[in-house]
Length: 193
Image 1 (tube, rainbow, N blue to C red):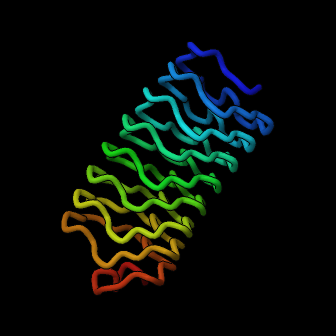
Image 2: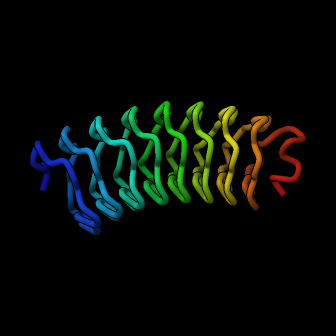
């Protein structure tokens, strides 16, 4: 299967889960909903773009899609749910949608090629293990409206080069910056330990 019908609007829960030979390179432009687990473990899925009307990347929608090579996410996305892109080792995004407010637990866990230059300014919450093991993530600052960083959110992000934390942070979980050896400044003294 290399193409889906052009007027398809919804891909249901687990529809293509584990279809390791599914070789789609694009999704229909009318698509508005990709339900949880829809493409989980579709290791040949090599999409470079998503349809323009998506607003949420659901739970585990693309988890384990090791060939997924998205260059960008659609600008309407406001939420990336838990494990949405976990283990997508070919994902090389350099930016996230401007109006994104929440990144769910383990959303980008183990995305070793993820090369974000910055996080969106409206982002308020980074959940547990959201970027854990993203060894190419070299952020220098976090967004000013960020209030919550869950446990292990940046654990093992060895290229992370932050020098300070935003002023509105109200919660930092356990081991948030564990193994982030390049962090500098007093703000990280307790968080790195």
